[in-house]
Length: 83
Image 1 (cartoon, one colour):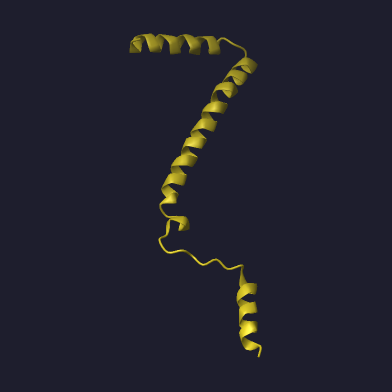
Image 2: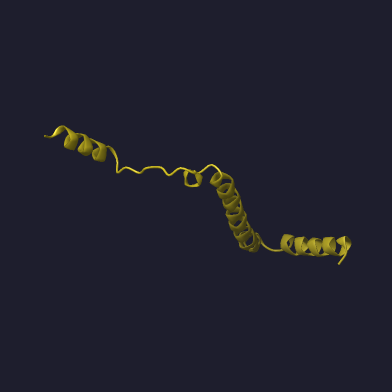
């Protein structure tokens, strides 16, 4: 199919939509743009995740020691202080 054929199809679809009532246009618009926006958002999410994965803590060579918070270190200090 040539570019002229593609443009003719797009022009025919545009003319059909323009001839419909407002509510049919809204439904067609939502039926087309909803899935397209959802797919585009998923693509952007994957690209951002891939870029940020280079800088995440999971990719560090030395493991990060995890603590349960301030209570763990305070308990450890108390245990050292008790005879």
